[in-house]
Length: 262
Image (cartoon, rainbow, N blue to C red; front, side):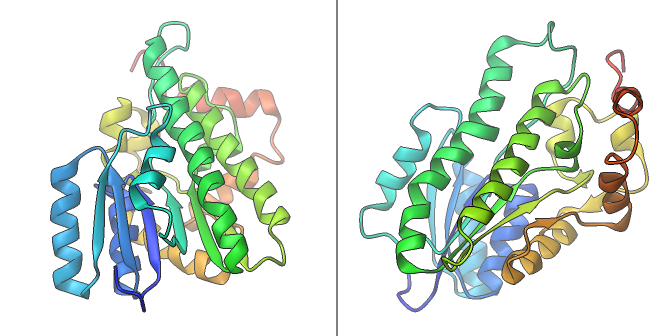
């Protein structure tokens, strides 16, 4: 790492929004700590960022579903490491009736989407506060704004991320550290394939955004210290509409967007 360049740690950096955010941060003068399970993809990204932006990158392969994953990442960085930007991007979803879904898959989802995000933030936040500067970008989803039948755990984890981000942002007011929560709608990534929702109405519509467009919006919002960013006008309208519609109607609509028998 170069002493003159700030350092950004990005989880889930091997693909999708995380990869695009890593590239943007490198472009904007950051060195990187790249975290994901797939070491080959991380190594290739590190080489690309070095060539394109002269950014130094440290690759840390990690399975964030492991109970001590966050602590192991921090231990790997070492006691003298300074992280100026934390991007909690890693996460995944799963489709199906809750009582039929694999128990281990649901618990892994909670571990990655909630536990690792919480623990890594808790471990790195004290240093940011002590230095009087830092930025945390948590990746949630428009799923955070309402419950999601047949993706119940995924929607619930993203609601947690949104709630935690808002609470921490208020706690940190005046410290020089900001928290931004990214809530994208349908985005062109591998998420749909992993979650098993490639062919449901929610993801087959024409309003999906590219991962690059979402990442650019997220970076700009983070730099401004904005609390919540929902990229895309249609996504903003959708996120706001749930505040006024009857809860029972919202549940029926979401159920139709990813039915159990797709």
